[in-house]
Image (cartoon, rainbow, N blue to C red; front, side, top):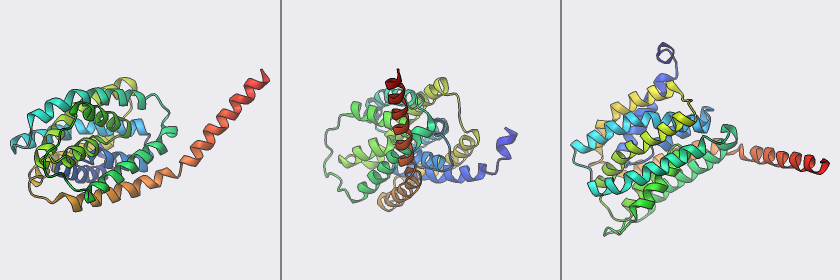
Length: 270
């Protein structure tokens, strides 16, 4: 623990965790996507980045859930119908991600994060339905949990943005989705622990400290802040950071091509 406290990156992650949780608690999205994008930019392997972010989310989502409960922001129907499919999706996604080499997966995860950034930006310009529309919450929860585990984030951009776009109250959607996210993060973190066993401890501690400080502020802000300008800023940031890692994709394709040629050569020799 002394090594963590003396690590110069601790304050950096604390500030990042504060900002990410402030955004997530207010918008109902972008904590995982923002933090994972940041860790990838620092050279962290995708599975380790996702495992670290989800471990930190155990604390931040718990604090956020308590704060949203106190503010009366939770719809029990949304919560109950999202949580179990979300947990199952998170377990499947974490298992798949931990089965692949980090260097090979990293640029492709960055493509996913870029898409998430564009999805967030698209919500700024999309009209919200005037009346709530029927949404299949089970499949939505599963997809949200799966992409959240694989990409290190995505629960909010997938689940929250869909429900809000369908005309549901942003306040109750954000409170309910954030509360369900605790259980998704718990299942995902446990899966990573058993399959991977590797996390970035300094990042976790910093993200947790910053997130806990921001959670009560965000729960109150959720009822008062205009979300679209903040959403636009977050989307632009994620797109910009993701583009930095995507330039590795041609290199990965070349590596795969070399492996295929090598295997074909060996087969023809035999």
